[in-house]
Length: 96
Image (cartoon, rainbow, N blue to C red; front, top):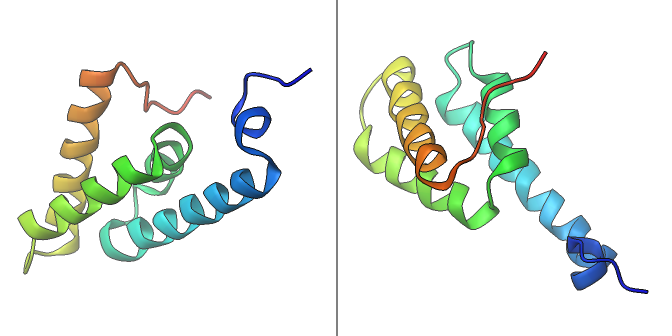
Protein backbone atom coordinates (compact mmCIF):
# COMPACT_ATOMS: atom_id res chain seq x y z
CA UNK A 1 0.00 0.00 0.00
CA UNK A 2 1.47 3.34 -1.08
CA UNK A 3 0.42 6.26 1.07
CA UNK A 4 -0.80 9.43 -0.57
CA UNK A 5 1.94 11.54 0.95
CA UNK A 6 5.03 13.19 -0.46
CA UNK A 7 7.17 10.27 0.75
CA UNK A 8 4.68 7.73 -0.58
CA UNK A 9 4.57 9.38 -4.01
CA UNK A 10 8.19 10.49 -4.37
CA UNK A 11 10.26 8.39 -1.99
CA UNK A 12 12.41 9.18 1.00
CA UNK A 13 15.32 10.49 -1.10
CA UNK A 14 13.14 13.16 -2.69
CA UNK A 15 11.75 14.07 0.74
CA UNK A 16 15.25 14.49 2.19
CA UNK A 17 16.30 16.62 -0.80
CA UNK A 18 13.18 18.78 -0.39
CA UNK A 19 13.97 19.29 3.30
CA UNK A 20 17.55 20.29 2.49
CA UNK A 21 16.27 22.83 -0.03
CA UNK A 22 13.85 24.24 2.56
CA UNK A 23 16.71 24.47 5.07
CA UNK A 24 18.81 26.44 2.57
CA UNK A 25 15.88 28.77 1.84
CA UNK A 26 15.33 29.32 5.55
CA UNK A 27 19.01 30.17 5.97
CA UNK A 28 18.77 32.64 3.07
CA UNK A 29 15.71 34.31 4.60
CA UNK A 30 17.40 34.60 8.00
CA UNK A 31 20.64 35.92 6.51
CA UNK A 32 19.06 38.49 4.23
CA UNK A 33 15.79 39.51 5.82
CA UNK A 34 15.74 38.80 9.57
CA UNK A 35 15.54 42.02 11.53
CA UNK A 36 15.57 40.10 14.81
CA UNK A 37 11.85 39.37 15.02
CA UNK A 38 11.14 37.14 12.02
CA UNK A 39 12.74 33.78 12.77
CA UNK A 40 9.49 32.03 13.77
CA UNK A 41 7.62 33.49 10.80
CA UNK A 42 10.30 32.33 8.37
CA UNK A 43 10.30 28.85 9.96
CA UNK A 44 6.54 28.59 9.41
CA UNK A 45 6.94 29.82 5.81
CA UNK A 46 9.64 27.20 5.14
CA UNK A 47 7.31 24.51 6.48
CA UNK A 48 4.03 25.55 4.85
CA UNK A 49 4.97 26.94 1.44
CA UNK A 50 6.56 25.15 -1.49
CA UNK A 51 10.27 25.57 -2.18
CA UNK A 52 9.75 27.06 -5.66
CA UNK A 53 7.19 29.48 -4.28
CA UNK A 54 9.59 30.60 -1.55
CA UNK A 55 12.45 30.98 -4.04
CA UNK A 56 10.36 33.18 -6.35
CA UNK A 57 9.20 35.30 -3.42
CA UNK A 58 12.73 35.81 -2.06
CA UNK A 59 13.92 36.82 -5.54
CA UNK A 60 11.07 39.31 -5.88
CA UNK A 61 11.70 40.75 -2.40
CA UNK A 62 15.41 41.12 -3.14
CA UNK A 63 14.61 43.05 -6.32
CA UNK A 64 12.03 45.27 -4.63
CA UNK A 65 14.14 46.05 -1.58
CA UNK A 66 17.63 46.33 -3.07
CA UNK A 67 19.72 48.90 -1.21
CA UNK A 68 17.32 49.18 1.71
CA UNK A 69 17.98 48.41 5.36
CA UNK A 70 17.18 45.00 6.82
CA UNK A 71 13.97 46.22 8.47
CA UNK A 72 12.62 47.42 5.11
CA UNK A 73 13.72 44.20 3.38
CA UNK A 74 12.00 42.13 6.06
CA UNK A 75 8.81 44.16 5.73
CA UNK A 76 8.82 43.66 1.95
CA UNK A 77 9.29 39.90 2.24
CA UNK A 78 6.60 39.62 4.93
CA UNK A 79 4.14 41.52 2.74
CA UNK A 80 4.81 39.24 -0.24
CA UNK A 81 4.42 36.09 1.84
CA UNK A 82 1.24 37.43 3.47
CA UNK A 83 -0.24 38.18 0.05
CA UNK A 84 0.52 34.68 -1.23
CA UNK A 85 -0.84 33.14 1.97
CA UNK A 86 -4.09 35.06 1.61
CA UNK A 87 -4.47 34.07 -2.06
CA UNK A 88 -3.79 30.39 -1.41
CA UNK A 89 -5.42 30.02 2.00
CA UNK A 90 -2.19 29.30 3.90
CA UNK A 91 -2.03 29.98 7.63
CA UNK A 92 1.36 31.49 8.44
CA UNK A 93 0.54 32.26 12.07
CA UNK A 94 2.56 30.47 14.72
CA UNK A 95 0.23 28.49 16.94
CA UNK A 96 1.36 28.43 20.55
